Length: 327
Image (cartoon, rainbow, N blue to C red):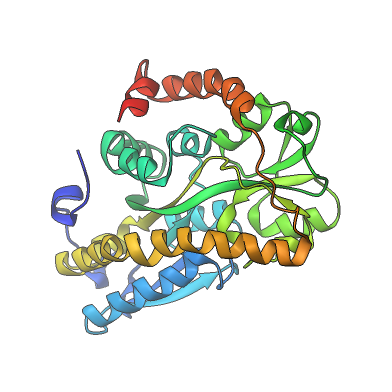
């Protein structure tokens, strides 16, 4: 079932006064803290600023937002803070849930549109249930299509076989780790906020991360090659603290979510997709004409498919991978 509309996708919820919610002092002032591990210039946070500014206008200033971009820790720190109520809205890749992690496995989904269709349709109920079971203080709202993940290395790869034995940074996301292991790399978990320094110091030989961050995070300074092949699909999950959510009126809840879904297709997904060619051109300008190779992925796909199929069916039940591929 598609969750394209707030009233159909999120349903009615219990309401509570801002003054009586657990997070009362912060919410009484109608100031909500939004957190993300990237810096303020990342595509995710530029979009968040536009989204939340429009929400503020549409609620006539009843909801205000304090954007914390790259200043309150890595993705896990921000998500845990949201579950506890020290942060109110989380945006990011990390969830600590296998149900979301598998989206980052290479070739799990065909592209970003397919991934969104799966997340907001075929698997929505299972994803929402997983969030509620793991984090009683969180509510899952929606996903934003952040574009494909890419591989970055210091030394040039001639094929994916060259990854064997290389230490490649991975986030604490099972799908990324599983994909790297399957092709023989040595995934090394490093939080995003520590990633630049780890590359600079030579802790790892390369990394897997969201492609649209290549320029804004200045990764061209600490790696030399960014491969045009997709390496999984990035989905920014939007989560909200349940007390913050219950402290809003139904109208405010609707404005928050419907505004997000209204803006995401053009102001985030399309803007991000359109920026990819510009980002690659900028990378080549800095690191050289041969610094954005496109590798033959056919052998890697054959190697990865059995592992990704097994992982998917282990998480969601037998036959799920085939349903996803036919969706």
